[in-house]
Length: 82
View 1 (cartoon, rainbow, N blue to C red):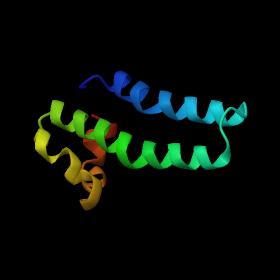
View 2: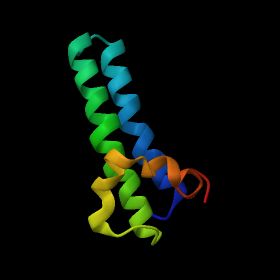
View 3: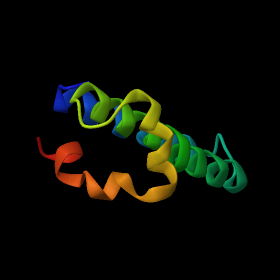
View 4: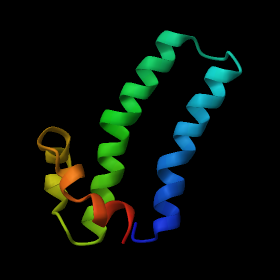
């Protein structure tokens, strides 16, 4: 996922869908909270990890290590600007 436009679409589209569903009252507040926790902790960790793997920054086995040691913040420039 080296294309930055594809990356931003991949991270923003599910977020927009969750907000839309909440706004249209298709999901309640508890479902919204559960979806946001899943989105921020699991989905974003995996998508950010795939981007870093495709750029050669980390190995594929290290994707889930980003979850607990703050690697997303260590590679902030690589994820969002390059």
